Each structure stands twice: as C-alpha cells, then as structure tokens.
Amino acid sequence: MSEKYESALTYNSYLAVDELLKLQRPLSTGPEHDEMLFIIIHQTYELWFKQLIHEFKQAQSALEAGDTHYSLSILGRIRTILKLCVAQIDILETMTPLQFNAFRSYLSSSSGFQSAQFRMVEALLGRRDSKLASHLPPKVAEEIKSLTKQNSIWDSTLEFVTKRGHQIPKEVLTRDKSIAYSSNEQVQDVLLKLHQSDPQTAMVCERLVDIDEGLQEWRYRHVKMVERTIGKKMGTGGSSGVDYLSSTLFKPVFADLWEIRSRF
Image: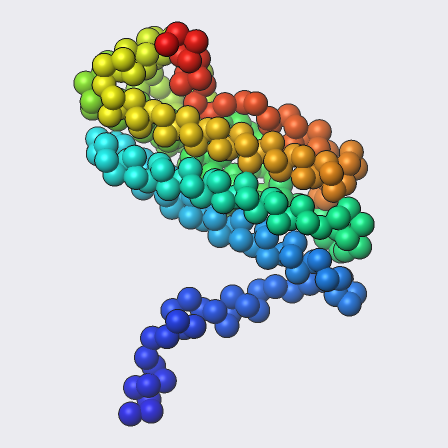
C-alpha cells in the first residue's frame, strides 16, 4: 500500500517542482539579493520561449491545414504570451542600476544574445541570415539552420490564404525558404482584397499584426530597460548593448500587412 502511495502522481512530481526550485543558483557573494530576481525572470523567459516555439509550430500546422478557427485560437494565445513577456519587464525594472551592478560582474561572458530558443523564435518568424546562430554551439546552430530552410509562420499564412481561395503568386509560394522574404506588391494586392471581401481570413491576418506589434513592443521595452540599467555600456558577452538592441526596433516581421494600412 505504501509503495502504491509513493508512486502516485502528485503536483510536485508532475511539475518536477523539487528539481525546478534547485535551478536558481546565484553566483554573487552573499548572494546579492537581486540576483535571484534576475535569474528567475530570465529562466521564465526561456520557458515562455519554449512555449512560443511550441505554439508557432502548431499555428503553422493549423494554417497549412486551412483551419481558420484553430489558427485564430493559437495566434491569439501567442499574442497573450507576448503581452506577458512585456509585463515581466515591469518586474525587472524594480531593480535599480546599482542593484544590478552589484552582481553584474559575476555574469562574465553570459548574455541574452546567447539564447538559442529566442533565435529559434526568430527563425520561425522568418529571420534568415548567417549571424542568426553562428555564435551558438554547433548542434544548436544546426537545429536553427534547419528551421531557416522550412516555412516561416508567414509562409504558412500565405499557404492558408491560398487555401481560402486567394491567389498568391506561385513564385512566392515556391520560393527558396532559406532566403528572407521580401515585401511583395502583388501579395499586398491580394491581402488588400481579402480584407475587403473575406472577414475570416482578414481576422487571421490581423492576429499576425497583433503578434508583430507585440514583438515590437517587447523589443522596445527591452531596449529601454537595458538603457535605464546600464546606459551605453558594453553588454555582457561582448555585445554592443543598447546600440545592438536599438537596431532591431521598428522592423516589422509581416511587412506586407503593414504596407496595406495606407490603402484601406
């Protein structure tokens, strides 16, 4: 009877709570009080990145299957996760520059720039360049490279649009997916017409705009958080800090959907 009780599934065992709570290992002397917050926030981001990868892949399956309602559901969930990622910055900003600098030196060469999962998110969103994973371990870099040869979420959306009866140019659908997508006026014409005639497909497109706006909001808040914490200092791991982060701002992922705004 006792053996059966011990092997029964519990909240702790299902969620591996004991193991999870051992993963916060501050390095500073003391340790510094705020290092725990820094670790937990960034570990939480990694968990959300894992979920975003999971959701983007499911969204692609739903889109490529032409499933409008499920696509809307998953894309809406992604937008909600991004809102939460933005909200976490509010918590991180309760830490002052002096509090961060009390343990910053212990971070050594570690940097958020080394987040493999965020690079996977970018690959799923359509980023295609040689610098995407060149700084990561070979096995991880190869996994990300594999993603860059497949459909991005935008490619999956264009397949969805086609399944809904709208004629995306064949050369766009069959293009080399390892090359970054460029804005296309013919695609924009199709998108404009479907917004005017096909409300359900238009809703899917607007979910993508929500996601794009959420990503830009997260990037902006991240830049300002870093700037208020370390100013113009070099980032950990040798990155250029604020200057690099600022260069990523105001670059929409789904450019065609923004281009048509002025034509409505």
